[in-house]
Length: 51
Image (cartoon, rainbow, N blue to C red; front, side, top):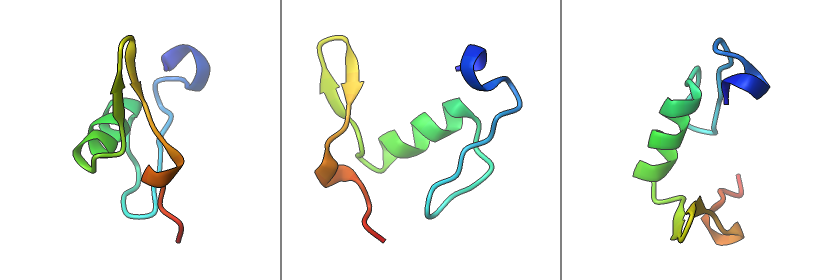
């Protein structure tokens, strides 16, 4: 979200770093972290790493 974080914002996970918002969403989707819902996607506590 450019309006909230700015174009230069970078995001990090436990196994990847320096991602744009679009890269982060693609990364998490590829890892199966999202659940499809009627108006987009969500996630669930069971999909979150615990390390």
